[in-house]
Length: 256
Length: 263
Ligand SMILES: Nc1ncnc2c1ncn2[C@@H]1O[C@H](COP(=O)(O)OP(=O)(O)OP(=O)(O)O)[C@@H](O)[C@H]1O
Ligand SMILES: [Mg+2]
Image (cartoon, rainbow over all chains, first blue to last red; front, side):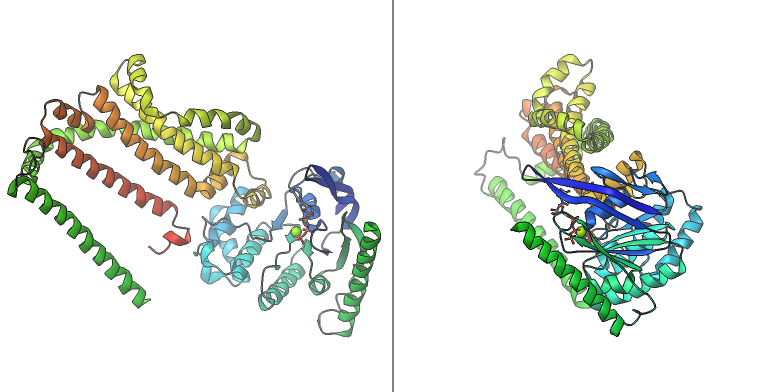
């Protein structure tokens, strides 16, 4: 279990410290799909990076199975919004490299496994392409394949589908849910798209901005939301909209 | 596709035709001025035919000179590559070290290395050692500075994506940062290579007893300008050939970039 306990973080802006996360608490259970939802600039990426051990909280801390996280942990993978693939490597080499660094399997098995993941992502025809030859959606699929190949127990994803068109995004959402249901992993998924959060998450964490805190947490009944046009789906959407209206009200008060 | 292929092919052919035309034009003007009209002093400006004859006659000497020059050059350049790139990576990666070294490297790299030549000859036992040192210094700074700056400015998400793998520092430096900054490093390497040639020729003109720079200087002292022109043209050919090889290597190393992927 991954626990965020009393995490605060500030960055200096024009020489002034600016509180980005304030006393934030959150739990992510094993095999749970949690979406972090909030307006731009509310600190979603900052929180995700702290949870992954890429950044350190100023006060409070993140605990993985009761151990304080000070650096990236084993069995964790991160999918970045701008892919962060290695452009000097081919698609296949990108997937193999992580396994190589982590000393997983022997060389031959690594290549076989990598090819399996690429096939899962419908990229088998592009194994030997360089990154600049791929479309945005194909790049993000490569990045996901690369992360899955590490057989993570926790997968962190920072707006992974943010830059994609609607068709590609829906296709990748399906693919991700499929992978999630077939593997033993938790997913922490950052998004600012309300329906994406409802469609994917077991729980949706709605965040406030200035400073970032958890506004409310919504449990999603996954059985009800498989259909994006269903009544229940809209019910959840309405709930979140209301939450954001509250967020706005609070901000108004804050500025007055 | 076919259209594009034809287009590039005819553009290439066109270029070859144009370059040959300009080259022939120069030869004709040279021939006319020296032989036909005799407006140029025959002592200072030998004819194309004379130069060609001298070149063929002197080939063995020239190639022996080239041999000794290239030994100096490759020793110094290899040493510069082997030190400047790892040091640039390491210093660029360590923030504190970078802050300390950056101002110093700015001053050091601003000194034109030619000024070291007399001093190097004075303090080192052999001329070979002195020129290797000077060529090394000339090649080192551009390679070091470009590696250093590119490392400092590297895209941080690449680093994060490697850090998530819990990568060791050594692998991070040589398997992630180095390939990522390879374009800038190679730019530094090509500047370093050109500097190497300039310093090689200068060092040889000052203190050598063999080599292509020495050849030019030696025959200038004797007023044998035919051979001087032979030497100059030969140096031009050698540098062009070496840079062409460098270009091939660069294309290979950067084959993952869109602009080099066509071939
Ligand atoms: N490295 C940094 N240095 C200074 N300020 C930062 C840094 N990273 C984030 N911030 C600030 O922290 C705040 C939260 O940033 P963060 O990237 O976490 O937001 P976000 O919720 O992910 O937004 P978005 O949805 O636009 O990605 C912003 O105001 C940003 O300016
Ligand atoms: Mg963000």
